[in-house]
Amino acid sequence: MSMNQITLLYLVASVCFIQALKGLSHPTSSQRGNLFGMAGMAIAVLTTLALVFKLNAEVAGSGIVFIILGLLLGGSVGTLMAKRVEMTKMPELVAFMHSMIGLAAVFIAIAAVLEPQSLGIVQTMDAPIPTGNRLELFLGAAIGAITFSGSVIAFGKLSGKYKFRLFQGAPVRFQGQHLINLLAGLLILALGLTFTLNGSTAAFALLLLLSFAIGVLLIIPIGGADMPVVVSMLNSYSGWAAAGIGFSLNNSMLIVAGSLVGSSGAILSYIMCKAMNRSFVNVLLGGFGADASASTETAQEQRSVKSGSADDATFLLSNADSVIIVPGYGLAVARAQHALKELAEKLTEHGVDVKFAIHPVAGRMPGHMNVLLAEAELPYEQVYEMEDINSEFGQTDVVLVLGANDVVNPAAKNDPKSPIAGMPILEAFKARTIIVNKRSMASGYAGLDNELFYLDKTMMVFGDAKKVLEDMVKAVA
Image (cartoon, rainbow, N blue to C red):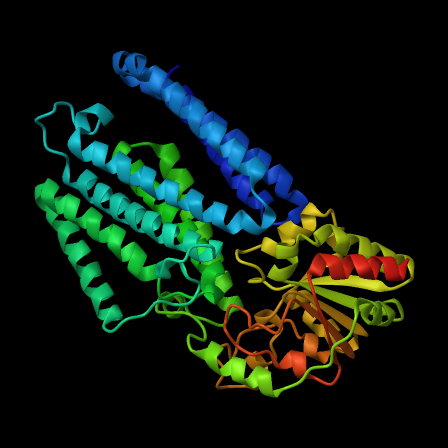
């Protein structure tokens, strides 16, 4: 295969990746986007193998067994994980994938520093690595290490099943934390410049260790409320790490793919921060409501709510002309999306206008609720984003909130002292009647009490979302 053919195939793969991003921007085209992404990656991998054989057939021939074993092992593990993963565990899977991308970038950088001639960076073993390549290796390795360790912490926080304090959803803070982060960042920069200027392997090793450490330090003070931003931020980091290594290896495909992932992740982080009325720097410096949980427990003990049964909720829903359903993470935990679809169908048959309202940061990762509803094959035309449906809450008869909390908390609009003040919310409080399904009165990720639960027009229906929805379906029928 000639270099012109390789360049052309890389161009085709790049176009596939761009089409994949375009397709993934909307639920109706997401399957097509995934197919484009798979096709682009297949072309990229096969073309890279052909390039390796062209540049060094002897080395490639002796290592082909390891290449095939790696492809089979990685592909098998990926397939098994994708088949087994539950929708509620999807954020953890994404964090795990980010960590693997970061670790791969680190390993490639280490190989390039120790044996640059094997990767075509230099012609002979004794030749020094060019300054430009050392700079690229420094950036790729540092970002990759931060991505790996940060993603491991994010995985633990999202999982919520590890008792180790660093993996707890609550922010972990200590005296002088920001100063330590600043000093570590400056030291990484100094070590990176030292490696870039004189090629010191000791400096490279130290900057890797510090990068792994700062990845942990950056993520532990971020609470569960900010996890959607963290996921998209780490996605961006993994892309830039891959792009940096791509420059070192002079691989245009890796540069293009990494840049696409990095830029799209950065844009998504911006969208998430805007949806939470937060600055990116503010998210990195700590989470919502660190101390709110203690005060909310006392407040909840002193205040009463109006509660009802699934039958009571069904009576209100079936006699309404219009209903807006707000899904949250509680719906995902209960795996109640299919029961929700059945309820929506029954209500529609009774002449009720049913719509779904999605907040950008609902769930534990961007688009979590959209994917959940798509899995249940709910009609896309019934699903609305926050900016498209907020104006309709005031004319809606009943709003049904399922396992959502912070994204419908009126404190964001009514309490300037609230940690979530200014955060755009779904304005469910404007509806004529509000039904909220939760397991208990526990606060959301932000650790804040929700004024919506105490309104006179709000009825709480306590219980598992799937069981409650199934009871509603029976009552409607």
